[in-house]
Amino acid sequence: MTEPSIRREAAEYRGYSLQVTFDPPQWQVVIAALVIDRPQLPAGKQTVKGWDEDETVKRAKMRIDLLIESPSLN
Image (cartoon, rainbow, N blue to C red; front, side):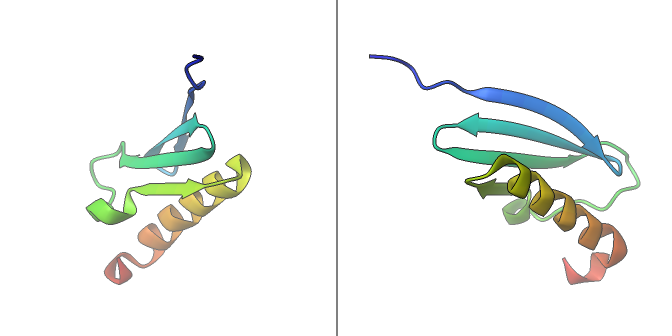
């Protein structure tokens, strides 16, 4: 029996860490603040899941943009 491949990457975006993981069949991005003065995402919004890597990362970045631009909405 073969173990599914798990691919992990790390990226930084606007003071946040993006941990990109592929665990077949789905992509997952976990968002964490790197800079102390950045607002924290609520626990239920720290993870973005999707079927396409680029689209999933794009949605995670949009979530960060919205948090920075309108922290009261989160």
